[in-house]
Length: 406
Image (cartoon, rainbow, N blue to C red):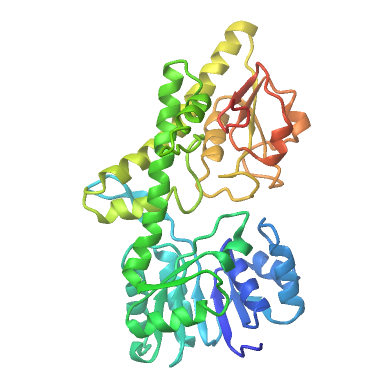
């Protein structure tokens, strides 16, 4: 059924592009916007500039049908959907908690960019994961730019998808939708129900914002327990994977698998949004964040110790191959990646090469093939890419990705 509505999607990245492609294939005329000319040109060729299963098929179909086009500037539409990054300021710290401060510059810029095109009856949506109050801030920015808020709807609906499964989960997952007022909530929910098969749950914009932060903080706390357990087990000369396997036989215990840290734009960032606004009260959330960040430092020290041992035994410095740079298996996303951080830290004073099957190059690092990495003296597995699962563990292997767990 033809929908006859236009959507302007601002931010054609890991969430914006899949959402735009899905909407275009569902009958919406989509005007995609991005600051990157490379991204815009690639999309208009019917191709993709990021790695995500099935996305290439959706984009090709949408572009070839004329329902999706990419541009450097916004245009008039019925619905505006903002999906831009919400990182934190790496050079600013909260005075109370000494924690990172959220950076909302991209949201503000996107809001100012669409403001001249917003007309009465429009729906403006924020999908970027954001600190509580950001959607209301967005509405205030629109009002300051001359938009009559009484004539439009403004709402938040945080994405809840897993990289590697985005196209399926955009459709199947339940969706939380919250407006700055009840009418905005209803308008936003009606829009999402046109393509979401999961349940669309209605609430306020602040609760919707906090719901996403809560989901990711929950996961961060649980990962922190596994990562802390791995460091304790190492001190006690215990195989942490066997330990977790045994403990998980308890009917009410489900410990996650440890890794080399936590990365990505969500879990490694969003809990700081809670900490930043909690005035020192989010103690468990904060400690989990610090534990997961420390795990990467711990891995760096473990590898450095292995390098020193090799030097003592062989009288020369070893070559270290870091296996994986992405923040999780089988994607090309390097945002806040602990594997990338570890590799860069080791590269400062060591002969380091890296293997990352999902990217072609990275400034400052020497990327090699898996076959070339086999010649390295120490193999450090940081990401459990599917390509690595056929590898065998040897005496020169350090496994922080759980590839060779019992």
